[in-house]
Length: 466
Image 1 (cartoon, rainbow, N blue to C red):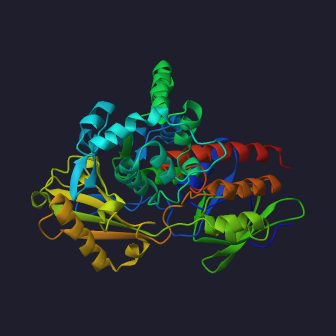
Image 2: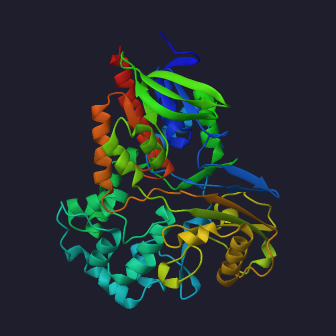
């Protein structure tokens, strides 16, 4: 007998970020009746597209890396491939800050050895990399320890550190190589060298051209990244906003029971299966009574705060060409931002021709306190940094700040052990799945791939559940 106000579904997905929406979409394609429950009044999670002064800026991810065939397959299934826009040709150039100046990063081995971004000593040090023995397979290294051992201090400081800040807003001294960048870890383990591994992987891609063709560069959509999450939500159909799930339990017949509130009224859902597509701390609260070990590990995953500051200038007032994707800031440079994207250069149509749009990132694990500064202070900080680094010579036309109190999960040392507790919980509690960006990668492509794998597992369970 159902409880008053209850609704039965095959699968209840908690969380309408890209992970939850993509999981629900993949389940629905497999004939599973699914509902997504979202506590906020909007879907999309950190993905959001805003418009101001004729410009388009993002409140979260700015692009998708076309790194897996799943990406194109999802776009085709949603009917939005035609809305895709590729990164501009100039976006192939990326910069780092060195000695207070923007220096282009090399894009090929030949360019590396000619680049002013690295000293002759750093270039010579790289020749040793193929002859350095790999770490033992059972030893977990930080990204910093790995880079220092294989590539040297300068490459760590001026390539690896800013790259880690750009992807995770993280600290290479704390992040686990095997957890955060498993492909790089696998290359060393398989080939004994990153350089040899990259050469071998490139050879394999050439020999397997049809699959390799699926991988490409960065892209967005004509109307911004929200195109993806809006299309997923439309395709799923049953996305319930304002649904605060507060407790989880199981009935005598094995069904999952979710209870909470929606607009002040009781909310009850009964389901054969539940997928938690929410941040780790929220998942920990929901499963604490059912899987205390997993809850403890999930609650311990750190998320640093991050502020995203979009700034528009008159194009004539910015001295730099902005011909590139943007720049990253090494910790050694002691700046107040992690890096910036040249948003109006990355994709066509992001701002009027006479406007330069730049998106900067503040805080992260490097300077978490900076993300909490008042809006006016943050705007002044970012403007000061852009004055120094790209020659922004006048006050901005406008500034828009987005704050994420808990931004990107950190795959720190010990992260894989934390996820083993999550794996154990899924085995002990059939029909329960965890699908969020603390597991399986933080990029949009990673999330689409992880959602498909989760949907396949859950669909098989639902098909056998009574």
